[in-house]
Image (cartoon, rainbow, N blue to C red; front, top):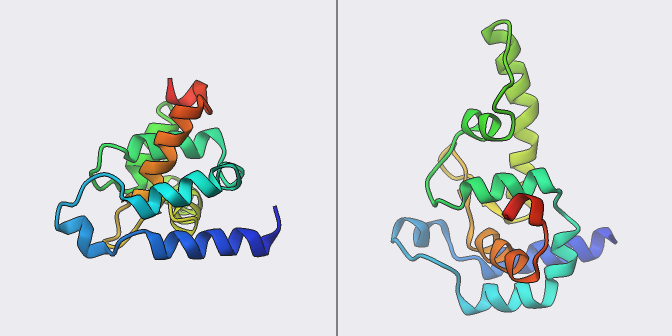
Length: 138
């Protein structure tokens, strides 16, 4: 995908996604602006994520805050480490996945923990509606 198109979609998503204060005000779900963005840009947004990333979004769909270790454990439940240093190094590298989802607008990270954004929730709803990522969203 053209980087200019990707940047335009992310910029539009940032404008459509309400502020962090809406998250704390308890405004659930998605709004009309986000739905409109998804309906226009879903196929481009779909190309920005992989099934493991969609799995992380699905995990975050519960609406609670999750830290890096919780996401890592969700994606790699049987992963073990020899010591804390090895675990910290892995988590540091794993966090790039979450930061990427923040950069695309699917996750938000305002408190050091991550949670799904309205764009991420609308994306998952559209993916389910389109029957995409069936292995992950089944």
